[in-house]
Length: 365
Image (cartoon, one colour):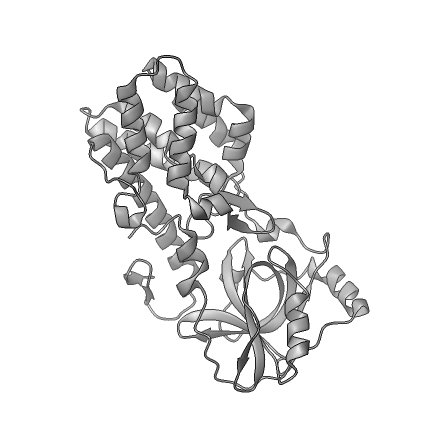
């Protein structure tokens, strides 16, 4: 299973826990304007990261709204579910109201996707998923915060060595000897606008390298693995492997948007970063006079096959050792980053956790 890169896996299905409820809760009314202003000033200093939250914790923090579901009825009244995000991950927020559905709807309509909300509630583990319940019973609060009342650096992670990584990309590009491949790389990475966007883009919404600079970091990791493979197997076309590794995820520049959280663009969802990358590649190749068709086809194949299997999103599967090298390096970096994060962020006293994405147990000790 290719764990990285699909908005469907990250924003739907398992990401939201089952809608069943076990407890009785009463409605929470909208906070007054005066109280909201006071809470806005308090919010900057009270940030609990999602990765540090444990079942039973009292929550008094703020999160970006990644997703919001409609108000629905349950046995004791009305409720709705939303998704909170910060630089350490995402978590389901459930607002439990009573029979006054209009009041619940007012709270639901008071904020939108991309807004930042203050949350006071209680964390719990429900069917293996950590979530935050907000209700009058636990003196809950769910209210939109104004700009300037939260720290954006707490919501979106940013890697510290972006400038150093940009220099590394240019250095690696200069190692390519084949003149057309080198010219192609220069058309991307010596373009100041593209390089600026590429250097700040994330590699995923939350599964791996989900940060400003994450795509840059992931790309360099893939390159390093590929170059080690090329040392072990000198029969590989090193220039093709290096060029393909540097360009394999260029479609992600158009696939992601970053506001108060990382999200997928419409074309990222509808078309996908692999096809978008192929479009970018062919657009640049068209601007290079007499670019060899053979090289063009091989590079397209590397990009189009880098997820490895059709069921993982690749239109074609690797049919050259160079394409297989890029695919395996890409998959390895994404899975390693994900598994390391799961072990680091696990909230349990057990030695093991079950991971549904990987379909296996992960040993924590």
